[in-house]
Length: 465
Ligand code: SF4
Image 1 (cartoon, protein in one colour):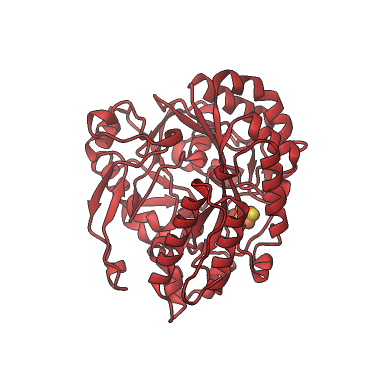
Image 2: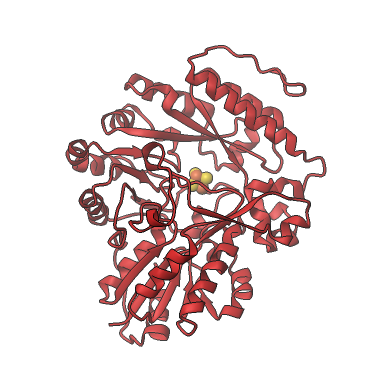
């Protein structure tokens, strides 16, 4: 049988942090081909627990097995310099020698399937492709993932010189893309129909301290700034697949599990609750901790859900407010109100969860935002005694909100990067210092929450409360 190698590529950015990252779409794709009888191999250059990595570099593992990535400073792209940005820029991932060693150790590959994540990380993808090509110049490469889906035209044009086939899908999850690959690259002419969501292929991770689980793909909401609907069809994943994924993580002895769902609690009575009831004894036996990096919808956190969070050791609990402004209520497809947040926090507190461990997402740097709303949002959360988790706006192509940006910005994925505050492209009065001030205020308020301070006066020149 033919050999297919699945690669999670390097990240190129100003900063990157490993918050329970796993390339779930790539790993499900690997599983699909494995089930069809192909030999599959996964190389994840972002795997900080890789058994060989410690021979090359030391990575400090932090709370709940989060960590930094190995990194190498590279020149900042000219594209950024042109707009006056001069900051350190890095490649994150295995030292090149380790990646080369792993590539040389695999059986002769017939096909590479490469993942892509953030649109503005495509230079990391290019770096990965150059290394692959230096060893296997003639092996075909397919690019999938978020960048490949949201910036399809850019990817086709940019990676033409490497003869890369771009498939605009976050994972190989449609009959058409699967059968196209089987026929064109693998001489497999039998038509195959995908019936269920394949499990996550974790077998090639030699040491796993954390893993991820997904119970639902996509999201029933349609916020103006989010591509969830574009990237994945809303679907409850079959429970058998989810239990298989849990079994694998138990066998791998993970200590931390992050949910990757965009809408974890939607239809909770038929999905999340029975799933957690089924696995709860096994979770308790193993002292596993849960995390919600993508946040959960506050409106669904009733007493029952709050008790599950408490009983099953949910340590990172994030919920989204995004903004307290009324205009945002429409932009967010009416997904959350202040009252939803108040009720969710009360339910969690009454179930014994320490409020200081609850983090609430607030967006900033969004087109059309009112800076005063951001301060009021922070004050609202501080008064509730929970932590503020600022999420800085990044351009997500093909979304409604992306349309306010000029074409030349949308066409260059490096400009989508939240670290450069894309708002600068549409707001002449944009001032980076205002955002730094917001960031510092959030840090200061969170410090107050940590210390148990109840009253604080925010007194900033133009945003006094
Ligand atoms: S609720 Fe969250 S995941 Fe769903 S569309 Fe809105 S931002 Fe995206």
